[in-house]
Image (tube, rainbow, N blue to C red):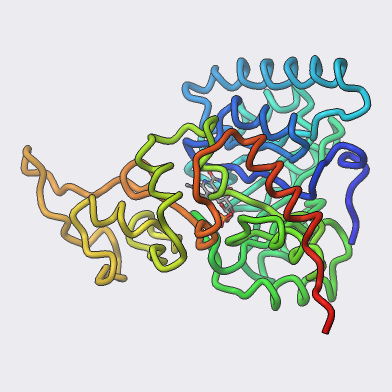
Length: 322
Ligand SMILES: Cc1cc2nc3c(=O)[nH]c(=O)nc-3n(C[C@H](O)[C@H](O)[C@H](O)COP(=O)(O)O)c2cc1C
């Protein structure tokens, strides 16, 4: 196990609040970092692109002010998520802003790029890349990523299918750098379990949707608090890539979550809207993403309160005697 120097003395628990499309905004990132967990957001959440400059200025300034006031317990570093995919035409521009603010940590998804890793290293940042299998894990490290995010079965959003037990142990057989484990982690005992398995960090997304600072509609937050693993369906219908979604949101969109077609979504019929156009429910806006761990989330609370609960559970979690 290896925790990079960047995090030493700055975490209350070994947690990275993962980037969530639409949902992760500066209020949530700042609250997470002040409470001692890495806060992150996708650069694409700042729209229009010029807003990213404002967001980075605000996050940097507020965390620096916090650190001056609390030198004994400085905030956790923050991270920016870059979608490294040819559809992302903002990548160069967003990367230049990350360089301007010397963003401490970059999280890359949907493609590993050597130049991005090198650029982050030049300004003193580190890069974690998220992967769903060993092939992509090797590729990420070959291209110069510093750490791996293992997206195991049950994770919210675009998820993998590999058991966390197999995923961490196979990765640890060849990689001794930092590993964050993701997938259905939503309480302190599970954070402890991730460490026992051999990961350095738990990488947590869905649990943070039900926080006051998250940019999600109340009905979505409410659905997270009322749902459990049985309410999650794994489908490639909405984006073309397999992901985990809340069944009740699929019902609300007029579809049967237990009988979703699995073939090419572009050929599926979703009925027609008022203008006669084919109406397909929008992933993320109408079809809500979530991992399987949300049975542990019962209330919408400030992020600091959720993190305090995680810490208490993490401290109390021990292996009972035989
Ligand atoms: C609603 C939602 C949106 C997400 N958006 C992104 C994203 O923009 N970029 C990304 O790298 N991962 C995204 N993810 C995946 C998370 O970063 C993370 O891998 C996942 O939430 C971890 O599993 P958990 O939700 O069970 O904790 C998203 C997940 C959810 C639930």
